[in-house]
Image 1 (cartoon, rainbow, N blue to C red):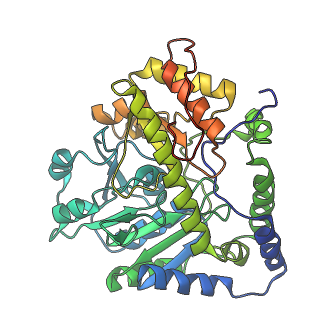
Image 2 (image 1 turned 90 degrees about the horizontal axis):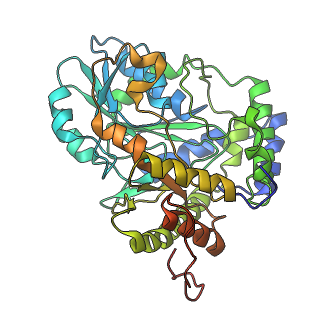
Image 3 (image 1 turned 135 degrees about the vertical axis):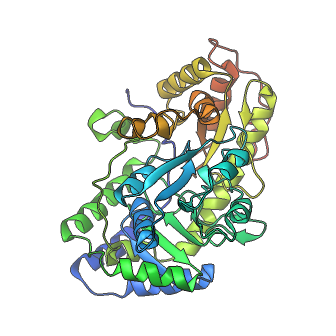
Length: 415
Protein backbone atom coordinates (compact mmCIF):
# COMPACT_ATOMS: atom_id res chain seq x y z
CA UNK A 1 0.00 0.00 0.00
CA UNK A 2 1.28 3.43 -0.96
CA UNK A 3 1.36 6.26 1.60
CA UNK A 4 -2.12 7.80 1.69
CA UNK A 5 -4.81 8.77 4.15
CA UNK A 6 -6.18 5.40 5.33
CA UNK A 7 -9.02 4.76 7.75
CA UNK A 8 -8.92 1.79 10.09
CA UNK A 9 -12.23 -0.15 10.17
CA UNK A 10 -12.62 0.77 13.83
CA UNK A 11 -10.74 2.72 16.48
CA UNK A 12 -11.19 3.70 20.12
CA UNK A 13 -9.84 7.00 21.44
CA UNK A 14 -7.18 7.16 24.14
CA UNK A 15 -4.93 10.10 24.89
CA UNK A 16 -1.15 10.00 24.95
CA UNK A 17 -1.16 11.43 28.48
CA UNK A 18 -3.49 8.69 29.72
CA UNK A 19 -0.98 6.17 28.41
CA UNK A 20 1.95 7.93 30.02
CA UNK A 21 0.20 8.12 33.40
CA UNK A 22 -0.76 4.45 33.17
CA UNK A 23 2.86 3.60 32.36
CA UNK A 24 3.75 4.59 35.92
CA UNK A 25 1.94 1.47 37.11
CA UNK A 26 4.53 -0.68 35.34
CA UNK A 27 6.68 -0.14 38.40
CA UNK A 28 3.97 -1.16 40.85
CA UNK A 29 1.65 0.68 43.18
CA UNK A 30 -1.90 1.86 42.72
CA UNK A 31 -5.30 0.36 43.42
CA UNK A 32 -6.74 0.96 39.99
CA UNK A 33 -8.43 -2.41 39.68
CA UNK A 34 -10.39 -1.92 42.88
CA UNK A 35 -11.42 1.57 41.76
CA UNK A 36 -12.53 0.27 38.36
CA UNK A 37 -14.54 -2.59 39.90
CA UNK A 38 -16.40 -0.20 42.19
CA UNK A 39 -17.13 2.21 39.33
CA UNK A 40 -18.47 -0.61 37.15
CA UNK A 41 -20.62 -1.97 39.97
CA UNK A 42 -22.16 1.46 40.46
CA UNK A 43 -22.70 2.13 36.74
CA UNK A 44 -24.30 -1.24 35.95
CA UNK A 45 -25.89 -1.93 39.37
CA UNK A 46 -23.97 -5.21 39.39
CA UNK A 47 -23.62 -7.53 42.35
CA UNK A 48 -20.13 -8.59 41.24
CA UNK A 49 -17.63 -7.49 38.60
CA UNK A 50 -14.55 -9.47 37.49
CA UNK A 51 -11.69 -8.11 35.37
CA UNK A 52 -9.81 -10.41 32.99
CA UNK A 53 -7.41 -10.30 30.06
CA UNK A 54 -9.86 -10.28 27.14
CA UNK A 55 -13.47 -10.70 26.08
CA UNK A 56 -12.93 -14.34 25.13
CA UNK A 57 -11.23 -14.96 28.47
CA UNK A 58 -14.30 -13.44 30.14
CA UNK A 59 -16.67 -15.76 28.27
CA UNK A 60 -14.46 -18.77 29.03
CA UNK A 61 -14.46 -18.00 32.76
CA UNK A 62 -18.26 -17.62 32.74
CA UNK A 63 -18.76 -20.90 30.88
CA UNK A 64 -16.41 -22.87 33.11
CA UNK A 65 -18.17 -21.48 36.17
CA UNK A 66 -21.62 -22.39 34.87
CA UNK A 67 -20.55 -25.86 33.70
CA UNK A 68 -19.02 -26.86 37.05
CA UNK A 69 -21.26 -29.50 38.56
CA UNK A 70 -23.74 -29.41 35.66
CA UNK A 71 -24.49 -32.21 33.21
CA UNK A 72 -25.55 -29.70 30.56
CA UNK A 73 -22.93 -29.13 27.85
CA UNK A 74 -24.61 -27.31 24.96
CA UNK A 75 -24.15 -23.58 24.30
CA UNK A 76 -26.35 -21.92 21.67
CA UNK A 77 -24.79 -19.04 19.73
CA UNK A 78 -25.56 -17.17 16.48
CA UNK A 79 -24.23 -18.84 13.35
CA UNK A 80 -22.71 -15.50 12.35
CA UNK A 81 -20.64 -13.95 15.12
CA UNK A 82 -17.06 -13.26 16.19
CA UNK A 83 -14.86 -16.39 16.07
CA UNK A 84 -13.81 -15.66 19.67
CA UNK A 85 -17.22 -16.87 20.88
CA UNK A 86 -16.92 -20.49 19.70
CA UNK A 87 -13.22 -20.50 20.64
CA UNK A 88 -14.20 -19.74 24.25
CA UNK A 89 -16.84 -22.50 24.21
CA UNK A 90 -14.34 -25.07 22.96
CA UNK A 91 -11.73 -23.84 25.48
CA UNK A 92 -14.31 -24.39 28.24
CA UNK A 93 -14.85 -27.97 27.07
CA UNK A 94 -18.44 -27.41 25.94
CA UNK A 95 -20.42 -28.04 22.75
CA UNK A 96 -21.12 -25.33 20.18
CA UNK A 97 -24.73 -25.29 18.95
CA UNK A 98 -25.57 -22.92 16.11
CA UNK A 99 -28.78 -21.01 15.56
CA UNK A 100 -29.27 -19.25 12.25
CA UNK A 101 -29.63 -15.47 12.12
CA UNK A 102 -31.96 -13.06 10.36
CA UNK A 103 -29.88 -11.02 7.87
CA UNK A 104 -32.04 -7.93 8.39
CA UNK A 105 -31.32 -7.82 12.14
CA UNK A 106 -28.22 -10.01 12.72
CA UNK A 107 -30.21 -11.45 15.64
CA UNK A 108 -31.34 -15.04 16.19
CA UNK A 109 -33.89 -16.73 13.96
CA UNK A 110 -36.23 -17.12 16.93
CA UNK A 111 -38.38 -19.86 15.40
CA UNK A 112 -35.23 -21.97 15.05
CA UNK A 113 -33.96 -20.98 18.50
CA UNK A 114 -37.15 -22.20 20.14
CA UNK A 115 -36.67 -25.62 18.55
CA UNK A 116 -33.07 -25.88 19.76
CA UNK A 117 -33.82 -25.32 23.43
CA UNK A 118 -33.93 -28.50 25.50
CA UNK A 119 -32.70 -30.01 28.79
CA UNK A 120 -29.14 -30.39 27.46
CA UNK A 121 -28.65 -26.64 26.90
CA UNK A 122 -26.48 -24.90 29.49
CA UNK A 123 -26.84 -21.37 28.13
CA UNK A 124 -27.80 -19.16 25.20
CA UNK A 125 -25.57 -16.27 24.06
CA UNK A 126 -27.45 -13.40 22.37
CA UNK A 127 -25.01 -10.93 20.79
CA UNK A 128 -25.22 -7.16 20.35
CA UNK A 129 -23.26 -7.36 17.10
CA UNK A 130 -21.61 -4.09 15.96
CA UNK A 131 -23.42 -2.29 18.82
CA UNK A 132 -26.94 -3.13 17.57
CA UNK A 133 -29.05 -4.39 20.52
CA UNK A 134 -30.20 -8.00 20.32
CA UNK A 135 -33.62 -9.02 21.66
CA UNK A 136 -32.37 -10.40 24.97
CA UNK A 137 -35.82 -10.21 26.57
CA UNK A 138 -37.20 -12.58 23.95
CA UNK A 139 -34.35 -15.02 24.59
CA UNK A 140 -35.03 -14.87 28.33
CA UNK A 141 -38.71 -15.66 27.78
CA UNK A 142 -37.79 -18.76 25.80
CA UNK A 143 -35.36 -19.89 28.52
CA UNK A 144 -37.52 -19.03 31.52
CA UNK A 145 -38.14 -21.93 33.87
CA UNK A 146 -35.85 -24.28 31.94
CA UNK A 147 -32.64 -23.83 33.95
CA UNK A 148 -30.88 -22.18 30.98
CA UNK A 149 -28.62 -19.17 31.63
CA UNK A 150 -28.68 -16.20 29.26
CA UNK A 151 -25.15 -14.85 28.72
CA UNK A 152 -25.31 -11.40 27.19
CA UNK A 153 -22.49 -10.86 24.69
CA UNK A 154 -22.04 -7.10 24.95
CA UNK A 155 -18.41 -7.22 23.77
CA UNK A 156 -19.13 -4.71 20.99
CA UNK A 157 -21.76 -2.63 22.77
CA UNK A 158 -20.44 -1.18 26.02
CA UNK A 159 -22.42 1.91 26.93
CA UNK A 160 -25.37 1.06 24.68
CA UNK A 161 -28.98 0.78 25.81
CA UNK A 162 -32.16 -1.10 24.97
CA UNK A 163 -35.48 0.25 26.15
CA UNK A 164 -33.61 2.69 28.36
CA UNK A 165 -31.69 -0.14 30.09
CA UNK A 166 -27.93 -0.49 29.80
CA UNK A 167 -26.69 -3.34 27.64
CA UNK A 168 -24.91 -5.78 29.92
CA UNK A 169 -27.77 -5.69 32.43
CA UNK A 170 -30.40 -7.56 30.38
CA UNK A 171 -29.16 -11.14 30.69
CA UNK A 172 -28.31 -13.28 33.69
CA UNK A 173 -24.61 -12.52 33.23
CA UNK A 174 -22.75 -10.40 30.68
CA UNK A 175 -19.30 -9.59 29.38
CA UNK A 176 -17.59 -6.70 27.61
CA UNK A 177 -14.41 -6.61 25.54
CA UNK A 178 -11.82 -3.86 25.84
CA UNK A 179 -9.84 -4.82 22.74
CA UNK A 180 -8.20 -2.20 20.52
CA UNK A 181 -11.16 -1.93 18.15
CA UNK A 182 -13.91 -1.73 20.76
CA UNK A 183 -15.95 1.19 22.11
CA UNK A 184 -13.50 1.56 25.01
CA UNK A 185 -10.00 0.10 25.05
CA UNK A 186 -7.00 -0.61 27.20
CA UNK A 187 -5.34 -2.77 24.53
CA UNK A 188 -6.81 -6.07 25.62
CA UNK A 189 -9.16 -6.71 28.47
CA UNK A 190 -12.50 -8.14 29.49
CA UNK A 191 -15.20 -7.41 32.04
CA UNK A 192 -17.68 -9.87 33.57
CA UNK A 193 -20.68 -8.58 35.47
CA UNK A 194 -23.81 -10.10 36.97
CA UNK A 195 -26.68 -9.17 39.24
CA UNK A 196 -27.34 -12.81 40.17
CA UNK A 197 -26.06 -13.97 43.56
CA UNK A 198 -25.89 -17.65 42.56
CA UNK A 199 -24.01 -16.92 39.31
CA UNK A 200 -21.68 -14.51 41.10
CA UNK A 201 -20.74 -17.24 43.59
CA UNK A 202 -20.01 -19.70 40.79
CA UNK A 203 -17.82 -17.19 38.95
CA UNK A 204 -15.97 -16.34 42.17
CA UNK A 205 -15.06 -20.01 42.57
CA UNK A 206 -13.65 -20.08 39.04
CA UNK A 207 -12.00 -16.66 39.25
CA UNK A 208 -9.75 -17.70 42.14
CA UNK A 209 -8.03 -20.09 39.73
CA UNK A 210 -7.28 -17.31 37.21
CA UNK A 211 -3.62 -16.20 37.47
CA UNK A 212 -2.20 -12.69 37.36
CA UNK A 213 -0.95 -11.54 33.96
CA UNK A 214 2.74 -12.22 33.31
CA UNK A 215 4.83 -9.06 33.52
CA UNK A 216 6.06 -9.58 29.95
CA UNK A 217 2.47 -9.46 28.72
CA UNK A 218 1.74 -6.32 30.74
CA UNK A 219 4.72 -4.49 29.26
CA UNK A 220 3.98 -5.70 25.73
CA UNK A 221 0.34 -4.62 25.90
CA UNK A 222 1.28 -1.13 27.12
CA UNK A 223 3.92 -0.74 24.39
CA UNK A 224 1.45 -1.89 21.73
CA UNK A 225 -1.05 0.66 23.00
CA UNK A 226 1.53 3.44 22.64
CA UNK A 227 2.24 2.33 19.07
CA UNK A 228 -1.47 2.10 18.31
CA UNK A 229 -2.03 5.61 19.67
CA UNK A 230 0.18 7.00 16.89
CA UNK A 231 -0.41 4.61 14.00
CA UNK A 232 -4.21 4.43 14.25
CA UNK A 233 -4.33 7.98 12.86
CA UNK A 234 -5.43 8.00 9.19
CA UNK A 235 -2.24 9.77 8.12
CA UNK A 236 -0.14 6.88 9.49
CA UNK A 237 -2.43 3.84 9.42
CA UNK A 238 -1.37 3.01 5.85
CA UNK A 239 1.95 1.77 7.24
CA UNK A 240 0.75 -1.00 9.59
CA UNK A 241 -2.04 -1.80 7.10
CA UNK A 242 0.61 -2.48 4.45
CA UNK A 243 2.57 -4.98 6.58
CA UNK A 244 1.17 -8.49 5.97
CA UNK A 245 2.84 -10.04 9.03
CA UNK A 246 0.74 -7.83 11.34
CA UNK A 247 -2.41 -9.48 9.95
CA UNK A 248 -4.55 -6.49 10.83
CA UNK A 249 -8.26 -7.26 10.66
CA UNK A 250 -7.66 -10.98 10.26
CA UNK A 251 -10.25 -13.19 11.94
CA UNK A 252 -8.76 -16.34 13.47
CA UNK A 253 -10.11 -19.25 15.47
CA UNK A 254 -7.76 -20.44 18.21
CA UNK A 255 -8.12 -21.81 21.71
CA UNK A 256 -4.65 -21.28 23.23
CA UNK A 257 -5.33 -17.66 24.21
CA UNK A 258 -4.20 -16.25 27.54
CA UNK A 259 -6.61 -16.27 30.46
CA UNK A 260 -5.41 -14.03 33.27
CA UNK A 261 -6.59 -11.22 35.50
CA UNK A 262 -6.51 -7.66 34.23
CA UNK A 263 -3.34 -5.95 35.47
CA UNK A 264 -3.02 -2.58 37.21
CA UNK A 265 -1.60 -0.89 34.08
CA UNK A 266 -4.63 -1.71 31.96
CA UNK A 267 -6.97 -0.71 34.77
CA UNK A 268 -5.03 2.58 35.12
CA UNK A 269 -5.46 3.23 31.39
CA UNK A 270 -9.21 3.10 31.93
CA UNK A 271 -9.22 6.02 34.35
CA UNK A 272 -12.00 8.37 33.23
CA UNK A 273 -13.60 5.54 31.25
CA UNK A 274 -17.19 6.78 31.63
CA UNK A 275 -16.42 10.12 29.97
CA UNK A 276 -14.35 8.50 27.21
CA UNK A 277 -16.99 5.86 26.50
CA UNK A 278 -19.87 8.33 26.37
CA UNK A 279 -17.97 10.62 23.99
CA UNK A 280 -16.90 7.76 21.71
CA UNK A 281 -20.43 6.37 21.50
CA UNK A 282 -21.92 9.80 20.80
CA UNK A 283 -19.46 10.29 17.94
CA UNK A 284 -20.17 6.84 16.52
CA UNK A 285 -23.93 7.36 16.61
CA UNK A 286 -23.61 10.76 14.92
CA UNK A 287 -21.36 9.45 12.15
CA UNK A 288 -23.61 6.45 11.61
CA UNK A 289 -26.45 8.93 11.14
CA UNK A 290 -24.47 10.74 8.44
CA UNK A 291 -23.79 7.46 6.67
CA UNK A 292 -27.37 6.18 6.90
CA UNK A 293 -28.68 9.45 5.43
CA UNK A 294 -26.34 9.04 2.47
CA UNK A 295 -27.22 5.38 1.95
CA UNK A 296 -30.87 6.34 1.51
CA UNK A 297 -29.78 7.63 -1.90
CA UNK A 298 -29.19 4.03 -3.00
CA UNK A 299 -32.25 2.22 -1.63
CA UNK A 300 -32.78 -1.23 -3.08
CA UNK A 301 -29.08 -1.87 -3.74
CA UNK A 302 -27.68 -0.99 -0.31
CA UNK A 303 -29.48 -1.64 2.97
CA UNK A 304 -28.09 -0.50 6.33
CA UNK A 305 -28.98 -2.71 9.30
CA UNK A 306 -30.23 -0.18 11.78
CA UNK A 307 -31.80 -0.49 15.19
CA UNK A 308 -33.37 1.67 17.83
CA UNK A 309 -30.72 2.85 20.34
CA UNK A 310 -27.87 1.23 18.36
CA UNK A 311 -24.48 2.80 19.04
CA UNK A 312 -22.76 1.35 15.94
CA UNK A 313 -19.29 0.17 16.74
CA UNK A 314 -19.41 -0.14 12.96
CA UNK A 315 -22.36 0.47 10.63
CA UNK A 316 -23.46 -2.88 9.10
CA UNK A 317 -24.71 -2.70 5.51
CA UNK A 318 -26.10 -5.42 3.25
CA UNK A 319 -25.04 -5.15 -0.40
CA UNK A 320 -26.68 -6.78 -3.39
CA UNK A 321 -24.53 -9.93 -3.60
CA UNK A 322 -21.08 -11.40 -2.95
CA UNK A 323 -19.61 -10.04 -6.17
CA UNK A 324 -20.69 -6.52 -5.24
CA UNK A 325 -19.25 -6.94 -1.76
CA UNK A 326 -15.87 -8.08 -3.09
CA UNK A 327 -15.72 -5.19 -5.56
CA UNK A 328 -16.68 -2.62 -2.92
CA UNK A 329 -14.04 -3.95 -0.51
CA UNK A 330 -11.41 -3.85 -3.27
CA UNK A 331 -12.24 -0.22 -4.06
CA UNK A 332 -12.12 0.64 -0.36
CA UNK A 333 -8.64 -0.89 0.02
CA UNK A 334 -7.38 1.08 -2.96
CA UNK A 335 -8.40 4.44 -1.50
CA UNK A 336 -8.15 3.67 2.24
CA UNK A 337 -11.86 4.15 2.98
CA UNK A 338 -11.98 1.71 5.93
CA UNK A 339 -14.84 -0.54 4.77
CA UNK A 340 -14.53 -4.05 6.18
CA UNK A 341 -15.83 -7.44 4.96
CA UNK A 342 -15.87 -8.63 8.60
CA UNK A 343 -16.05 -12.32 9.51
CA UNK A 344 -15.01 -14.39 6.49
CA UNK A 345 -17.28 -17.37 7.14
CA UNK A 346 -20.15 -18.68 9.19
CA UNK A 347 -19.18 -20.46 12.42
CA UNK A 348 -20.11 -23.73 10.73
CA UNK A 349 -17.38 -23.18 8.13
CA UNK A 350 -14.51 -22.76 10.60
CA UNK A 351 -12.23 -25.70 9.68
CA UNK A 352 -11.62 -26.72 13.30
CA UNK A 353 -15.39 -26.96 13.90
CA UNK A 354 -16.63 -28.24 10.53
CA UNK A 355 -16.72 -31.91 11.54
CA UNK A 356 -18.65 -31.14 14.74
CA UNK A 357 -21.23 -29.01 12.95
CA UNK A 358 -21.67 -31.04 9.78
CA UNK A 359 -25.18 -31.27 8.42
CA UNK A 360 -26.33 -27.85 9.60
CA UNK A 361 -27.60 -25.34 7.05
CA UNK A 362 -27.52 -21.71 8.12
CA UNK A 363 -28.83 -19.86 5.09
CA UNK A 364 -29.31 -16.56 6.90
CA UNK A 365 -25.76 -16.55 8.24
CA UNK A 366 -24.39 -17.44 4.81
CA UNK A 367 -26.29 -14.54 3.27
CA UNK A 368 -24.69 -12.22 5.81
CA UNK A 369 -21.22 -13.56 4.95
CA UNK A 370 -21.91 -13.03 1.26
CA UNK A 371 -23.43 -9.55 1.45
CA UNK A 372 -22.36 -7.71 4.61
CA UNK A 373 -19.79 -4.94 4.87
CA UNK A 374 -19.34 -2.49 7.74
CA UNK A 375 -18.55 1.20 7.50
CA UNK A 376 -16.25 2.99 9.96
CA UNK A 377 -17.97 5.25 12.48
CA UNK A 378 -15.10 6.29 14.75
CA UNK A 379 -13.83 9.79 15.51
CA UNK A 380 -11.37 9.90 12.61
CA UNK A 381 -14.12 9.70 9.95
CA UNK A 382 -14.41 13.11 8.28
CA UNK A 383 -16.66 14.74 5.71
CA UNK A 384 -14.10 13.90 3.04
CA UNK A 385 -14.13 10.25 4.11
CA UNK A 386 -17.88 9.87 3.96
CA UNK A 387 -17.96 11.42 0.50
CA UNK A 388 -15.34 8.86 -0.50
CA UNK A 389 -17.49 6.07 0.96
CA UNK A 390 -20.53 7.46 -0.85
CA UNK A 391 -18.70 7.27 -4.16
CA UNK A 392 -17.59 3.67 -3.56
CA UNK A 393 -21.08 2.51 -2.59
CA UNK A 394 -22.62 4.58 -5.37
CA UNK A 395 -20.49 2.61 -7.81
CA UNK A 396 -21.85 -0.62 -6.24
CA UNK A 397 -18.99 -2.53 -7.82
CA UNK A 398 -20.05 -1.60 -11.37
CA UNK A 399 -17.17 0.58 -12.40
CA UNK A 400 -16.64 4.33 -12.05
CA UNK A 401 -19.54 6.65 -11.37
CA UNK A 402 -19.38 10.45 -11.47
CA UNK A 403 -19.39 12.29 -8.16
CA UNK A 404 -22.49 14.44 -7.92
CA UNK A 405 -22.67 17.75 -6.12
CA UNK A 406 -23.09 16.85 -2.46
CA UNK A 407 -24.30 20.29 -1.44
CA UNK A 408 -22.91 22.22 1.51
CA UNK A 409 -20.41 20.30 3.58
CA UNK A 410 -22.07 20.55 6.96
CA UNK A 411 -22.45 18.07 9.76
CA UNK A 412 -26.06 17.49 8.66
CA UNK A 413 -25.39 16.84 4.99
CA UNK A 414 -25.70 13.43 3.37
CA UNK A 415 -23.03 10.78 3.08
